Image (cartoon, rainbow over all chains, first blue to last red; front, side):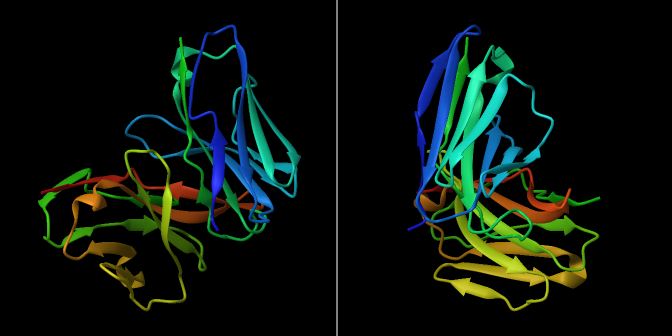
Length: 115
Length: 116
């Protein structure tokens, strides 16, 4: 079973709203990732958590705040976003930490629209 | 530089034709890993294959095959007897070592359309 789930599937929010994206995996993976994907572009890495600790932050603006409550869950808290933050947000997980190039398995993504 | 180039932005073929998607990579690592992912219109990235740099054996999985050539830094993907369900964006990716961790560097993707 290589399933990563993400909720919600679609999200529309205003620039003053606070919302959260959720990601869950039950494969026992110890690394989890957030990516942002704009239309017709490849995914761009935002954050990496390894063993529930933030391992990589790709200089993401502070209006995006990740959280890893346990090894199965990954959240992305959103606050005061801009219209240019509208994108597909993808979550992924891999078996071990990011120090070894394990295969990353992706969820279906959340399509975010910021008005 | 560590990068992946997918020179074909879009490819359109008729069903049952064979099609090859090109991937050329650059890396300074002596050991590295390459991946192919498929992204259908639904948005999810579906893992297809992982190949490490010390295994140059070509691989076949049903209608899919991969040709890895270190001499030309290429990792091409061929679909035989294409089907409409193969329509998707395909990404080639390279795993690179950054800040004591690994991250995926994606190519720009190739949008493949299979017409009935």
